[in-house]
Image (tube, rainbow, N blue to C red; front, side):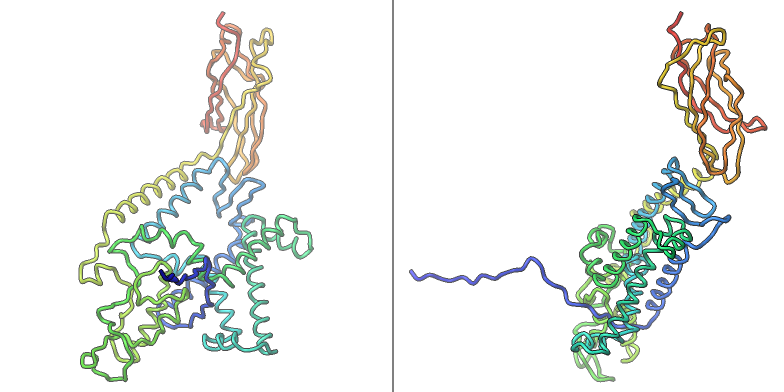
Amino acid sequence: MSEVSIPVEQVGLYRSEGKIYPREVKGRYASLRKLAVVVLLGLFYFGPFLTWSSRQAILFDLPARKFYLFGLTLWPQDFLYLALLLILAAISLFFFTALAGRLWCGYACPQTVWTEAFVWIEQWFEGDRSKRMKLDKAPMSMAKFWRKAGKQVSWITLALLTGFCFVGYFYPVRELAADMVAFELGGWALFWVLFYAFATYGNAGFMREQVCKYMCPYARFQSSMFDRDTLIITYDERRGEPRGGRRRGTDRAAAGIGDCVDCTLCVQVCPTGIDIREGLQYECIACAACIDACNGVMDKVGYDRGLIRYSTEHAMNGQPTRILRLRVIIYSLLLAILAGLFMTSLATRPPVIMDVLKDRNALYRDVGRAGIQNTYRLHVLNKQSQPVRYLLTVSGPEGATIETPVAIDVPPESMVEWPVAVNVPHESAIGGQHIVFSLARDDGQVMISETSRFRGPAIR
């Protein structure tokens, strides 16, 4: 028998992606996207420099374990509020995704925002899409060198500014600036400035759409939040196909062609390089650049707009779109309940926190006529922006008294430790009783109470 050779196809595990040159586009959604970039970058870069009551308005002071959000100061004991905020942000993302698809990705995601800014710089130095492609293919020259060098210097400058402002949310920004000017910046602060600068430079300058395609987990599980009533960017295949070129004024019905003139502008403007005419793809970030490009072409050839548009699968099939549906109602209820809990909890947050720690070195001491003595250490945290004085009282075992009257002064937004000795007469000093420590204002109103244990001899 003769041997039959079977051709073997070699498949690589990695395929290098070609560089995408997104074409600049004008239109309603492009203007909205530019406005979002300017507003969001403005908030980010100017946020650390805002002041509130003579201090930085937004500061996550990790060494001091304080989070300042304008007039609100959060402590480690307020971790519940941070957890609620993160849960609210996650459910809000699910809610808006179920309603309007990937609007977050197209208009507000940091990767999208900074990539847009870096592309603007690239366009300013190297020109429009065709000029950038031509420049990259051209051999090195002085003109090409200066354009590339100018772009790189601008990218690095913006990346360093980004790293500086990011660290400024965790390190008082004016001290950070002064330390950098005086070359006295600490090692960790310098590391994080350079780290976030490098991350910005790499993600927005080089990886760009690769982050959205291969690194972002949201692109992978977003489809689980979509249904036939979710607003997505769609191509009207029934209207556009069969696509093909034609002269202006051509009778489409007679020529047997659809509205799509196959100009490929929708592909050229896409920042992730996909063809929306092939259907919804996970790489689509819903930036609507293809809508603006297609509408411009439809205007030129005299056709109706909307060949590519925001729509739903039901609407594309001629069926009514339901805005209120089970998942949207569930997300809405969860958001309302959690937002209500967050606001109520924040409004009723106690202005003072007290922790009572029993002295573990000695269970109790017999102090003669004064009875049985237990010692405690109080941690009193004042969350208010003004100093306060509290009077400490105890109750529980009959005849319990504090060895000396205690008036505790606590500076604003500070915590003090206070040793306290409590005496109980011998006849009342039975081991294991509850004892209550209370802090009251000058007017006698009790602000907070904490319960501990009073240790004494066994039952007599």
